[in-house]
Each structure stands twice: as C-alpha cells, then as structure tokens.
Length: 633
Figure 1: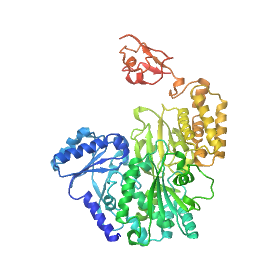
Figure 2: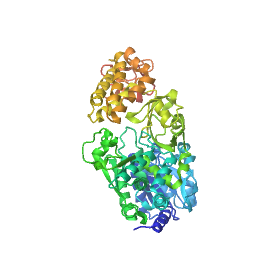
Figure 3: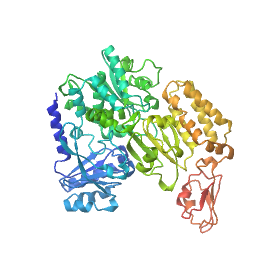
Figure 4: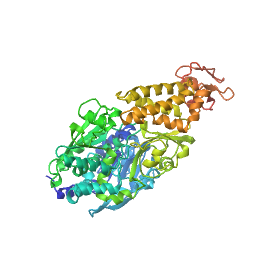
C-alpha cells in the first residue's frame, strides 16, 4: 500500500530522472512522429550513443503538438537552454550527439541554422504543494505556440509516457491526493461547477451536472456503478484523444479516479478503438504502473477508496461514439443506439449507473482539482471556460494539435497559430465538428471559438476536428465526402438515417458530375429536415449539417455545378478539362512522361496536346510542367 510519503519519494525520483545533472536528448514518438521517421531517429541516436559509450540519455516522449514539424527532437544540457530541432532525420544523429559533448559543442549546436533550431529557457513553476522545480520550456516563444494555453496538453511531448515517475515528478497524481485527503465528493463536484468545465466530446453539457446526476442516482441505489472514458474518436481529421492517450495516459487515469471518487463509481472502463495501438500500449503500461504504485486498486493512497479500471477495445464503428451504442459494445452486443430515457446515469453498463466522459474532459479534471476552479475559468468567455484542443488539418501551413483559450477568434487560430494557407491561396472555409459539424465561411472568420457562437453558424464545436479549406476545395465535394462517411457508418437502425443519407449522397454525386437539377437543392433541404427529425441518435441527427451549411453559405457554387456545369474550384473531374497552351509549351515531354494513361502526345520541342476523352484529370502534368503551359477550365 502506498502512502503520501511514497508519492513524495516518487516525485523526487521523477525529477531526478529528468534533471539529475546528465544531458539528454528526447525524441517525440507519437503516431505522427513515427509516421515521419521519428522511430528511425530514436534508434540511430540510441545505437550511436551506445557504440560511443556517451554519458547521456536518449529519451522517448509523446507528441508536442507541432505535427507539421515532425520528427521533433529536444536536447538538454545542464545550465544551458533547451534546444528544439524540427524535421530531424536519422542522418543527423551524429551531429546531434557531437553537440552534446561539452558546453562549447552545445553552443555550436545551437547555431546550426539548417537544423531549424529555436532555443528555449527553463522557467520555474511552483505547485500548490510548495516545492518549486524546473518544469517546462517557455514554448510560447515559438510562433506556433504563442496563442496557446496548455492545460490538457500540459505534459505531452515533455515526459516519457511509459515512466510513471516522470508524470509524478511534474505534479501528477497530486490532484488525486488532494481530492482524497482534503475534499468530499460534493466539494469536488462543486469545484467542477465553479470551473465551468463542459463536456469536450461535442455537446458541451456541463460536466458537474452530469456528475451530480450520477452521484444522486448512486446514492439512491447503492451498489456497482461505472465511469467510462469514451476514447472512440472517429471523426476524419481528428486525433486529439489519440495524442493525449499516447503522450500522457496517466492524466486520464487520474481524472477517472477523481471522477469515480466524486460520483461513487466502483469500476472504470476505457473504451478505445483498436485502431489506436500505441495509445492502447501506453494505457496498459500506465494501468500496470498505477496499480503497482497504489493509485489504482484497494485503498488508494491509504484512503478509504478503492477503484480500478480496464480497457475495452472497440472495433472502430463511428456510431459507437454515441454513448448508448458504446454501452452496447462494451456489453458485447452490436453497437447500436437505444432510446433514452433511461439515461446511462440511470441504467448504463450492465444496467448499472454509468457516467461517460471523453478523454479531453477527463484530462482537465486533475488540473482543475490541483490548481483550483479559478485558475481554469480565467481562460475562456461566457459559458465556455477553459481551453479547447483542436486537430488543425487540411490546407494549413502549420498543422498539428493546438490548445487555445475558449473565445479565441477562428481567424487567430487559423492564421496566427496555424500560419495561414500555404501556397498563397485564399482561405475558403473551415469544417468544424467533423461529419456532424459544418462549414464556416471566410465571412465568419471572426467568430469566437465557444459553444454558442460556433453553434450559431450551423456548425458545432464537436470533439475538436478543424479542417481548413482553400479556394481549390469544392464544397460539393466536401459535403459528399462527409455524407459518404456518415452514410457508410450508419448502423442502419433508423430508416431515415439508413436510406435518407443514401438518397442525399446520390443527389450530391449527380450534382458533382454536372447532372443535377435545381429542384435537387430543395429536395436536399427537405431530406435534411426529415433525417434530423427521424433519426434516433446524434449520427443521423447531425449527418445533414455539412450539406446544410454548404448550401447556406455556398449556394452559388451548387448552382454553378447545375446551371453552368462548371466547378468553380476546378476540383470535380467530370466538370473540368485540361488543355496545353501551344504558345507556351516548349515540348520538353515531361508531361507526357508522367501521364499515367498516355493522354498527352507531341514531338520533342513541339507543342503537345491532351486527349480530353482519355485524360483522367490526375493533375500530374500540371505539377511537372516547367513553364505553366497547362491550364484547367
């Protein structure tokens, strides 16, 4: 059994591991980093450091959020600034290791401009428990992080997710200790109420109210009760939950334990899709370590509170993000939603009271308890307090995982944090809320990121997907993409969802081919209303949103497809034609050599031509033409 003394000892172990006078190099080994070769960088550094018997540590950490700059490496030498390297390749391992030899070599390393280095200084933070310690670099000096506030992502990219002592070393599990030692379940729920935390899964329901309802049900009917972490993140372009679980799994476990104590839950379940193997690996390691250290199991931290949890791997069905379908899946049934009431807090897993929160919501809990509601709600505006994590993707210069204060205008998120649109193209829209959300046009770029303001546009906050589009994006194609996703992921239980989305998709496909009619637009809107009203769960009720918002803000683009049989974005292959300007073409033959269907012909140094019937509009010829002789009409 572990006590408070053990927690303090573990914290010293963690700090000693991080800052024990030895230099270290850390490599971000989240999924995004590994996808860009970070594992090769890590292995090369380890192999060379071992071969040369260097007195330094090569550390793995999670994702720091700047996915566009992966692989990311940090180098630390006692008494010196921390260095950050972006887009590192394994071939640079020797250069990095040479720079760690002594202070002079480290100073030279910091001047390697081609390595894209930016140096950060350590700052000192002080926890509520008194002891000051070196915590994290002043990451706000980097343009990508200047507008960000890291609460949920506070440890991501800084600690080794497989070492519990590092998590405790920077303050982990002290929120749980505070909750068990100085707070009652009611006072925890009250603190959550003061914080203003709302569910980060999309609906924005007040978290304290959800916990209060659950606790009242448990008190009225004592016995088994469950807290479930919904990690079934399925929106295209969304990877917030995955990154937190990969990089900082203990923050979620700690939040779940505090939640269980507050609401009276006896068991915990993490429902995570099987497509997240690294997240599941780190969760399993974290669960084992937490049990060994006394943060899970019987009489946690020596208190009269026992709680444990396990992982349930989901098969990746998008509909299982809906809580009643999720519960069915946990019970081994087909993941389909059921009518409510009864609500999960009344009858959930195995018919027992069940509280369900998503990863981001639970990752906020320990921070709020440890730092206080006031420290949390000083961020945000109106009824939307704290921060929100977004997966910034699409036509954006600096894609990645960002955490911004609620209320920040979309313009700042996209252009200041994300660096704007690459290639000098114009911003067109941003899709928020994934397949359940909607397109927000350039005219509404100053909309604050808060629940009410985003809902007013016709989109939703959702779990945090933010896909940016430029002028080359066709909104009909966007609506078709998201509708094809929801149509495919529909469980089929509701006829309006199963059949209605199929009919809508057929209409959109006709329009994108130039075969649509003006009455199709009215029919689309009619179907949208019927599907919203006739569907049982959130999947069907929100599936029409991408169509409705694109019709609302870009109706002229739909009309151009129908009336002019043209795609203004020049994206729909059935409505565009590639031509070569004979006055510009130099006959270099590059276009003919890359054409996959041999649609381009011509002699060397003579103007070439494209056979329109054979051409598949792949765009490869445009990419290689040195004189920009090929146009799309």
